[in-house]
Image (cartoon, rainbow over all chains, first blue to last red; front, side, top):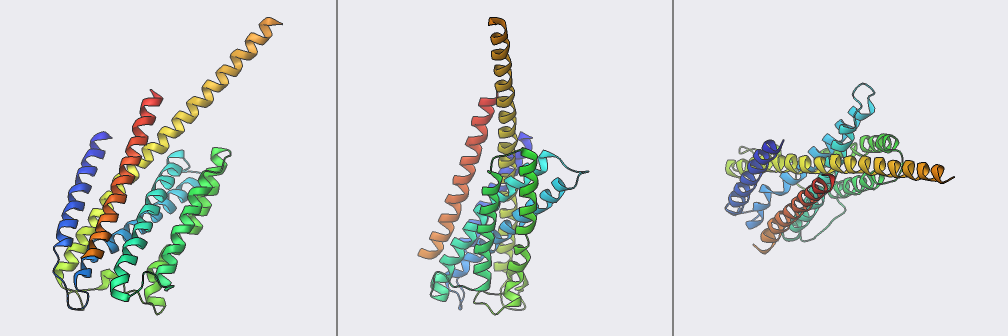
Length: 240
Length: 34
């Protein structure tokens, strides 16, 4: 497992550094000037957020199906959602910084922006729900249902730029060299997609291990507490 | 270039900070469970 983690981490780091170097090296365009450089990180961050919540939903479904039910799916769902929240927050921050010089405002209640913010708060709520005390199985089932409901905002957010008139540009992947973007920009953006996917996979793997270890430590703590109680009860009976 | 630098900088710092936090937590749990 450690070899996989190292390989994945190395690939993520190399692709991320390459994306940053090539992204910052992109030439300015007539329309966007220097700000076109955001294309290497902003759409890939949004993609990683969608991917995270998609994985959370799939893992939640697998947990709810009795035939595939396993604690592992609940851990994957939780780990992926937390990483997704980080990516969504960064999507909003980089989008806002990109919006300021190009649109003239930091924020606008546009369909895409509002839905992305809603997505962030829904999954923050999901993470809070996971922390509510209770029986682990009940908690996991409750969280799984919440994740499946929350993930419905992802396709709506993605298609918001088609369904409503928005200030936000159209879907980045539909911008072809023939239409409105040179091939070099698209190539760097696609590299960014790969880099963020690898970064997501590595972070989720690390976070998943934390979930597994926390569970293990929790079980051990419970076993120790039970053993102590049994020992106390035994000593009490001996005194009487 | 100020905005571009801020966007890239914040993204990298947050990702790196989160990665350090998660890896540190995993290490401390591994030590604790031994």
